[in-house]
Length: 63
Image (cartoon, rainbow, N blue to C red; front, side, top):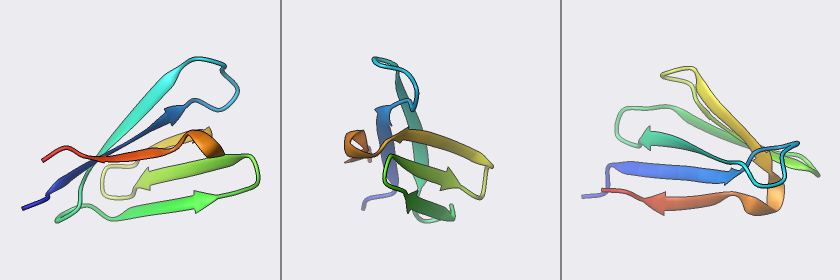
């Protein structure tokens, strides 16, 4: 069963800095928003978030 997703991308304002956010899709409340330039992924259960260049956002299944 899929339980965790990893979101990653290049940090907004940086040319080569990758940042990641882990989310447990059974327990966490996730919100993803997009603008012309950036994508934001927020784990509202933990208060963590990442803001990345829009075309670099990747979502991967971890487990």
